[in-house]
Image 1 (cartoon, helix red, strand yellow):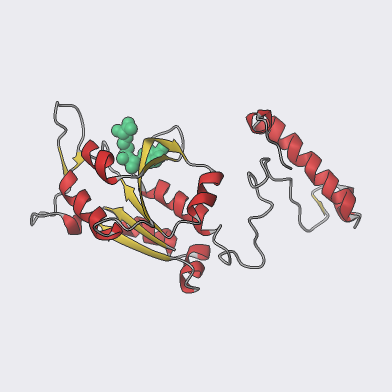
Image 2: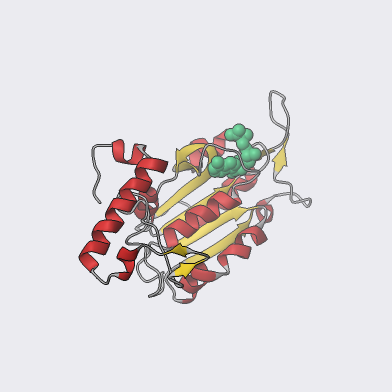
Amino acid sequence: MRFDIITIFPELVTGVSDHGILRRAQQAGLVQIRVANLRDFAPDRHRSVDDRPYGGGEGMVLMPGPLFAAIEFCRGEPQSPGSRVVLLTPQGKTWTQEMAAEFARVSHVVLVCGRYEGVDQRVTDTMVDLEVSIGDFVLTGGEIPALVILDTVVRLIPGALGSLESSRNESFSSGLLDYPQYTRPAEFRGLRVPDVLLSGDHAVIQRWRKERALEKTLKNRPELVAGPVCRK
Ligand SMILES: C[S@@+](CC[C@H](N)C(=O)[O-])C[C@H]1O[C@@H](n2cnc3c(N)ncnc32)[C@H](O)[C@@H]1O
């Protein structure tokens, strides 16, 4: 799988993608992560990528010229059938674990990071397959959202997680939030690990975990259990 990330701040992306699981997945050849500096696609010697909005208003907007050129370069021109171009924007569809699982089966994803007031609408209308938001709030740029997508997708690629990590029983994988986790020591500042976890009875532990997962989900995210399907 390959990711191309288009940004005016490449170091913001590589500062994260060169570490941990993302780094290991690249070294293992499971994913290729390339970062394109949008300014490299600017036609003028000042490497300008933004301009004032037509119709007035505050701030700047990323111009179509450099973005069209960068997207065409990264996704291939014409677009290859296996490529998906995603624009990070608070106006997009909210990113979910389900979408991450779907994207883990895509061969090539181009992530376009906005800045300032966003990108010229002609880019969205003609170059973008999907607009994605990471939540109902506004960040200053698309780099953190792009990293959220990158991280959530890569950890679902078979082999990306080491033997000590697993994505199988995590929150959302079964429709519920995860159960509470404990580790050594069994007692810390008078706080004891629940006896059931020390019992060695795996069937009882499984049942206890399911109950706690349901309890936590009902408390923090009741809408997850209100739907017609609850699989855990
Ligand atoms: C300050 S925001 C622009 C917000 C835009 N004017 C609006 O109100 O929808 C600058 C850039 O940050 C990114 N961004 C901000 N919040 C985001 C979110 N919740 N999800 C995804 N991207 C976001 C987008 O790439 C956006 O173009």
